Image (cartoon, rainbow, N blue to C red; front, side):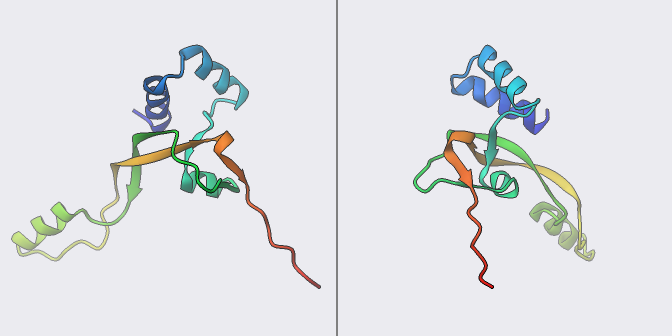
Length: 111
């Protein structure tokens, strides 16, 4: 299951209807307007002060760091700990809607 599917199902569980989500998918060209703090930041938005997540979901996150279990297994086997171990894991993520963010204000530069 992809993160988009997970977010869709979490939005349904939060009270959105399939019709509402279909309209949002159409309006936002196939992308639901629910993103994490970091995703909004990467898109040039900032979560408004005092806003709380609209809902949460366990999303897939990528890392190349070895897991604690892999480090422990290598140590128990007497092997060197691997420096990298690319994999995905699920992480509880807080999702915000478009109405909860604002464009990042750029500081004016003086000449």
